[in-house]
Length: 298
Image (cartoon, rainbow, N blue to C red; front, side):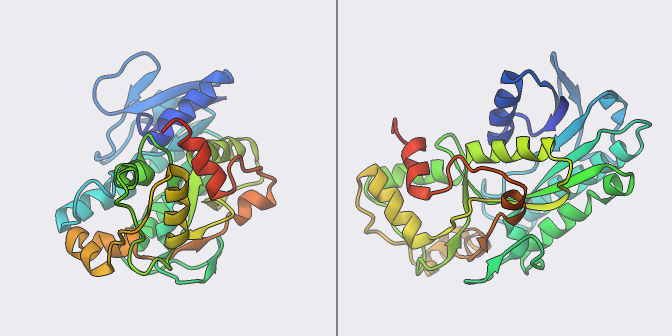
């Protein structure tokens, strides 16, 4: 296939492109600023996108978006996060819809933040959107794909969980304090964390590209979510470090503000029903084995 990718230099984009080129797919990067071989310019903050540069592309995988955990959520930061997802997705979807021969499939990233804080409730793709900034952003983010769907393009909206990789994301930030023996549960530790190994994010994308029966929302998470307390204990055990320094909820809120409630303290227990129903075989379905594999050289 010929696949165009936004967010190609991010954690998922880098891993995906490496995997795709190894099996001889052609990849075109959509990048901001100066281009090189195999890349074209796009501006997710613009009012429109000249999609003629994608003529002949079979699929578009849209991964671009402002990092949600790079700084404390001020009103300006929240607006950048929302705009980078909603406006960028909208102009891309509209551009694809206007093509005389559009791509067959448009895979757009979303997030399990769509469901909000749901306690112990088991969540599937047909569960309703929740409340809060992330849920509202994800709802608008997914709605922005509609022009592509209306044009007959197969649209898949990946609701991605907590991605585990020592190269970036939540796990990379946790490693130093845990290696120093300063790790511990966050809040009461009962909140569910729906995680997924980076290799399975890439595997899920390959599965979605090749399975014409899949469209709409797809939960991209391991089938075995765990509580924050269990996650903490397993990570400590894999690293052979104690986990005796909890972060009380009040401290998390003081340090991180609103972000703490939605990223660390919210409980989101998600199941990948669509992936399982369509035969995806997880490479790392269990947390302990996944962390051992990811951190074997740590």
